[in-house]
Length: 192
Image (cartoon, rainbow, N blue to C red):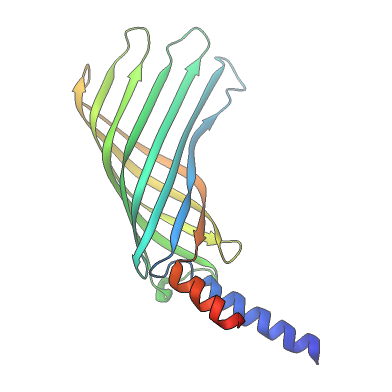
């Protein structure tokens, strides 16, 4: 009987916690990896794009924050391409009515900031306003950790040898959802 009761309590806690990650006051930190290529065939190519993010939920299902981006692509006997970005981001998570999996949610993300793409050895470059938008899906493997995939259109408008650059990226990442002060106080009061 005790095992049954313990199982029910743990299940109820997990279900409630699985919906608590995207509530007002919580904090999201993590990052995405894009375009990982180790070049197993010739030419030997290495490329990676890393984007750490942090956001605060201003209300349930809506987060605002910032991102930092660094990308590098290099190949043997070729130019090196370096990309960067810094800006703000916004996320909207769909409600429970659109839930596909028990612990999964769709979301939309948009960013705006400054960024650039620079190619060594006299290659083209663009530096200026960086915009992106796209849908994603997150699956919470624990009550506080979500694995996600994100398909985003990225546009770069600015100056340099090319005034615009556009691409479509598929990225994979993880986010850690930390409880805000209100949630921490509730847990503290429940323990007393």
